[in-house]
Amino acid sequence: MINKKFKLKAVGALAMTGIFALTACSSGGTSSSSSSPSPSGSSSPTASATPVKTPITFTMNTTVPTMNWDNDIAKEITKRTGGTIKWDVLTGDERQKMNVWLAAGDYPDVVTMWDDTYKAYADAKALVDLTDLIPKHAPNIMKAFNNDLSSLKQPDGKIWALRGPTTTKVENLADKGWVHIQAAVLKEFNYPQIKTLEDVHKLVSDYIKKYPEIGGGKTIGFSNYGATNQLYNIFDTAARLYAGMPATAHVYIPDNEKPVLRAFGPGYTDVFKFFNQMNVAGLFDQESLVQTPEQFTAKCAQGRVLVVFAGGGCTTNLVNAKMEDRSYISFDIVAPGRTKVVPTPSAATLRGADQWLGITKNAKDPVRILQFYDEMYKLENQILVGWGIEGKYYTIENGKRVVTDYVVTEIQKGGDAWDRLGFSYPRPLMQMMQSGAYLSDGDFAKYSFSVSWNQKTMNATVRDTLAKYNAKTFVDMMVKPVQKDLPFSTTYYNDDMKKFTTDAIAEWSKVVPKMILESESKMEANWAALEKTLKDKGMDKFNADAEAAYKKQKAEVK
Image 1: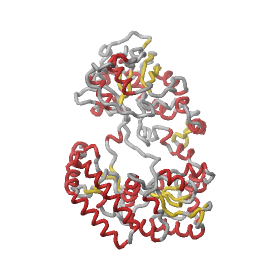
Image 2: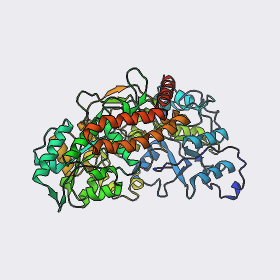
Image 3: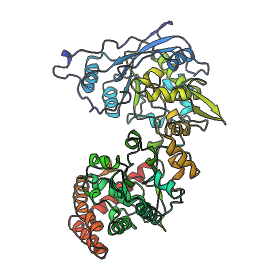
Image 4: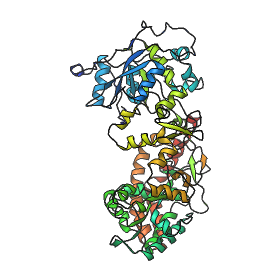
């Protein structure tokens, strides 16, 4: 389950035909401690601030065949907590193996689970009830959740499993703008300020006048791919981001909180007008509307595409082709007069992990295991799991953690590097999983979220070009947004909404090429025709259903 998600449907009755014929988990129920096992309710009712160091070894599931407990981080964890984990590796069909364990009652002492598997194990009473144990034995868990365990409770009011600690801040340094320009083009004109699409137009036009060919092929101004469903993915993304709209699935939610299909939100077609003008000027790659990602990448890797919109370009391919100078630099551009809006982070985006961790009934000393995990919620152990050993794995510079060149070099070797270093424990050891999560000390929870990691893993051209714009990461190049409470998810769609969005995207995909390739004078009529077609297919009902879904989600957030 580590580094590889899988979905399991809830297991119903335990009597499953033929399931006992399968090989069951051989290492379940092997937790051991040098002290006598203590039943769940026999310990002191008051949580002790003094960590329990009694050695304990327990079993736990993983899908990583190279997972081990023989690295610097694991050894330090054992030194600090007394705990050692023996890994029970899931091989073959993961769902089948988990079902075998559950049916046979032969599962590890601790299991990490996705939501549906958690439900199956909880329903089967395979997990230890932690509801009363946490307040008695886990002061650090209590502190991590501000003494409010409601987010861990299930509909029955019980806590059957743990999640990683929540965060109060997320800053994903992997975020970047949607307009990607070759560094060589920026350098040619002494790194001009890029604030509008007109700035990009002038840059591209002037460059192509000087260099009509690159590597023996025609220089291309603007390109990406748009085969089948990719047309919507790429061009809708460009339209939404240029208009400053948030990522609320399929819809735009105005101030009156009455959602409408996004295609008819304010400013949505502005980017198509720009592409239309670029097409007239001979700067737009018409194959963008039909080519596959593979076809685009082959073209991009020749170094001939000056600007890539929406998708991320092909910097890795260019570096491999000895054209690092043409690496892509990402800019975030919002139409003049528009405001960039993003949804306020929800409780779900701030929660500590995407999996649950439960102590099973096979554990001989569930309280001691809980105490081990209580230790892992401590700040210093969160740092240990996310960053490793100070000095060897990271240093402190200006009060912030900085990843060492040693870690960068080892990780870039690939293979089992994460396991050798001990960085494969985020889910089993309750680390924050959100990209860009911060710990309570005001620094990133994990080395790979940090500025230092981003800087050290960039190529020199990207790093130096960003510096010309007083930036260290692409996030520094982005337009500052306004946050709004806009909870909206397709999980609340009814069948009519699902069908309509499929039909709407199909009709949209017929019209967008016309918006770009036909005369600009026809654009308004083409979009009006799309609106009429979609109204005939039920757009008004979709908007009404979307409003109801939005109100329901907003009420649930409160």
